Length: 107
Image 1 (tube, rainbow, N blue to C red):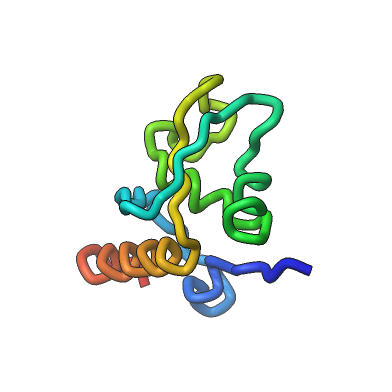
Image 2 (cartoon, rainbow, N blue to C red):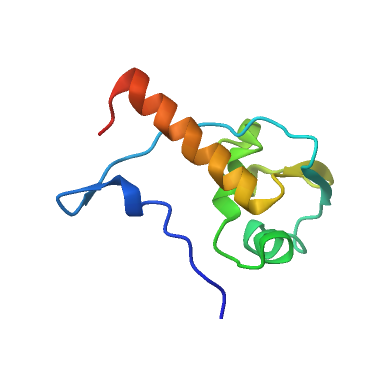
């Protein structure tokens, strides 16, 4: 069974989840690029393939901000960036949220 990463676990205050900003993940030299084929590829499938779980498609969308977090807006045969490896990319995301919080105080 795949381990589910609850990205909101650290963002609950008195049981209420704080709305997180859409913070793009900058490219790394270790990232993967894939040719996205509609009807075959989905972010949950890509997450399973590259991260070993289907729950982190949101991380792939953060690496491709030009689609605004909406998977159905990804055009056919687009080169899509998959942040890789997972642990480094996840830490990159957490660092971005912490910096945002320091600047704008979401917590």
